[in-house]
Length: 320
Ligand code: ECH
Image 1 (cartoon, rainbow, N blue to C red):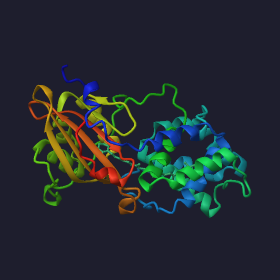
Image 2 (cartoon, protein in one colour):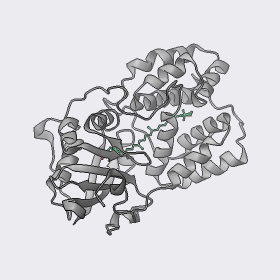
Image 3 (cartoon, rainbow, N blue to C red):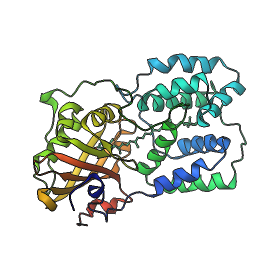
Image 4 (cartoon, rainbow, N blue to C red):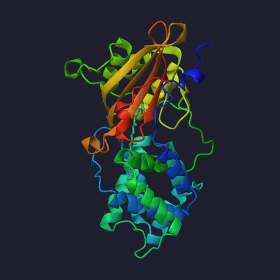
């Protein structure tokens, strides 16, 4: 059988991913919108991991200052309704603006709103609000997840708010802004125990320097990148767009890996380690696996990024 993106998806298939994340997200969406907002508030305030106030250079907040000011001027009821509308994907002006924002700006928007709620400048979740038994259960589940999984659930809910008339996860849809890569003198060369493939080492080095053009140059023309819990993003242009949107400020710390020949001159490489997001910095290290399929020319034909079920999985470098 020839190697295809579909067949590559199942390399190292014994990798245990954090399936609690999609499961919890599904049960979250079954709750009423009031419960969803209350749950997010409690999760956010009770999780005990602190968010880095100004994830620098990440959120262009100028874009949302206007909306935040508008919300501040509203009556408390209108403020609560605005949040309700965002969470229920209602077609409103703010919902449309929100949808047009970059992922990190959406996160920044809610971060600011959360601060304003804490200060009392924006209506908080009504004191004494009683969540349903079901919502309490979902909250308890979230509290038991490891921090990397908790912030993934939070992030997913924020990304899906707002009104999108033609909702799609396509990254080719609009182009993301370029960023400034780290200067050559400040870059560090990654070492990964068990890995000597230059493609893999260069991938991590370019990603850590936010130098996305050469990072994408490591992919085969029709290569694919599959983010956690998502479908593969196919083709260099779409991958570049995705990286510009999602990878600014990420710190990748691969630790160990294995590399083995696969069929037709391909090679499969699995690397495990930690990734930090600028929002939580060293407070949250996500346990990650990269499963690469390199083509006979050494280009990245496919790479899946998995959020691992537990730290124990970092040591699972077995084939299959
Ligand atoms: C309040 C109540 C009302 C409702 C809401 C509220 C506010 C919520 C707030 C939430 C903030 C959440 C945040 C979450 C950030 C999460 C970031 C994550 C990043 C993961 C990145 C990974 C990267 C992996 C990758 C690698 C590659 O090699 C290729 C690319 C890529 C409380 C007011 C809503 C404020 C800030 C989880 C795993 C390694 C795939 C990207």
